[in-house]
Image 1 (tube, rainbow, N blue to C red):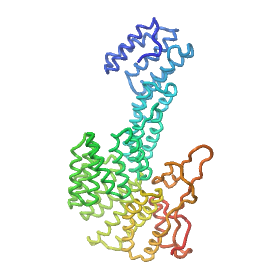
Image 2: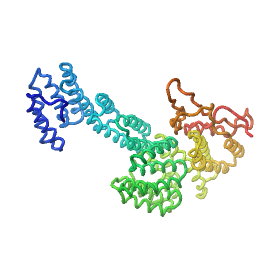
Image 3: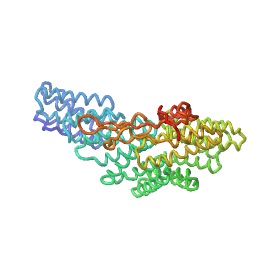
Image 4: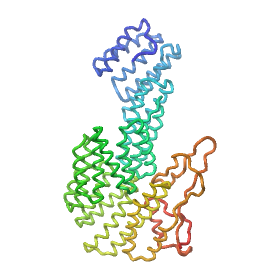
Length: 549
């Protein structure tokens, strides 16, 4: 590293030692660099009363910090920052200490970043860029921060910490604007990752908006990100019930990953294609995808995902014991994966007729989903279990008891799935949710009601399905893309105001009323409405009551 101003005549020995140490350090030879750096530092201590000594000492402390890490390195750089202020109090910026301080803040940001922190480095980076917007040290450090935010968000997604992952990415989207030139590639990478996080959390509407923005940016400036965006779009399509579109995106992603030699991405796409084939009843195709995925890439997680998929296929291929053996080898370090393993293990026990063990697995899987905000997975598990309960009649279990349990699972799930449509703006995504994602739950509820022969409940549920969906309470044109509704927070429905002055009026989405044949008499469905709202945290109907027709 060099100073803004050259070293004075009495500092030529220091300059030689400092430059040699810096060069060796840059080459990675810290063992040879260390004695030169320390000798240069000692020279700055021997010149008491010389303001230039303060500047040279501050500069040397950067290299000295490179000999250590963590708190010790941070303390050395902090001392250097204090020395720049001390020098300027005596002679102003005669020795270029203002520019040096910008570099010191950036250096401290990188050291803190190396500890794994993601918020703390940003304050120092902002200080550095405020002093010197094009600082040569700050710009690479900013790039490192953005990269770390993306990697950290992916790890948090894996562990179902969606709120923190979202916070990390939102912060990154602010920081990326600090670059002096437009950063379409960085924006696309952050938006693509946020789309992945939101889709995994069930926030499909906002995930779709992020994926669309990411695709537009990547098409212009970062084509290597396009296969990742197709992967996110596949998860959105799958989560909203459109497995055909999901498969199309995954096939594209796989081909593009293969074309650019990114075999880890190709393996992810193959495992996802295997899952879709399994859900569609094409287990031979699923096994081929899983087997191919396990051979690709360097990340051992691909083999884990492949093994999990092969276990699921083994259950439907009447090999439940093999499925249990495969699942024993699957690590459960992620709540989402753990819930999936428990669900497939429950399916295996279900196929073997070991229903107590199956129920225990399903209950544990559901609890994991609820505890980690995976409401959409809990909902899907509930209606699937309702269907499975009816099949236990073939094993001699009493139908009335099974019917009551199936109804308790299916009807609240269907009510919540139908109510979730209000989290989407009017358009194809909402229609897809209604037609494809909510439809299986509705069917399961109708089957469960039919099995109980509860005619009043059947009539009340049909009236409910025919009721008007929510409408805006006032006609106001939304401002910009921030009006997209997200799952699952019911209170997060306000649109962001734009422009100056007073905020624009916020449209209030009305929750549909309760439907009764007699306004004074609650319908047979109303206890189920309350149960659905309690179980899933989604308001299904308002307190208003209207007459059925």
